[in-house]
Image (cartoon, rainbow, N blue to C red; front, top):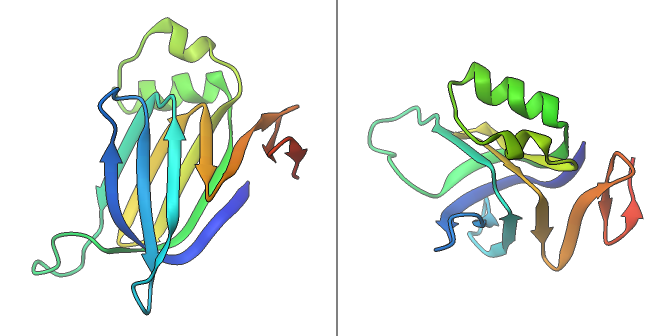
Length: 139
């Protein structure tokens, strides 16, 4: 698992017109200053649940304890989507080097399965079975 951000607010979710790229805007939890965009490219699945405690709090910004990404094997993807009654094509599950991006712990539980993740000019991708940043392999 590779940590990208922690203790931030999710300010917006933007799905690009191609339907395959999803951009997440994060802001500082205390001051509301812009922290950055997390961009998920070649998205296969998006699962979003809000966990608001109060009825009057019905929108963004939402507290997120941890934003991270990890390697997600085709078998894990197929099982996860099957368990959740999601549908895709057989080609989706044959894709190698998938990433599971998670934004959880707080008022939101967001999971995106995609091919690449970008944050502030850094590219996260699967390199030799591990998450790597700009071709530098991380544990």
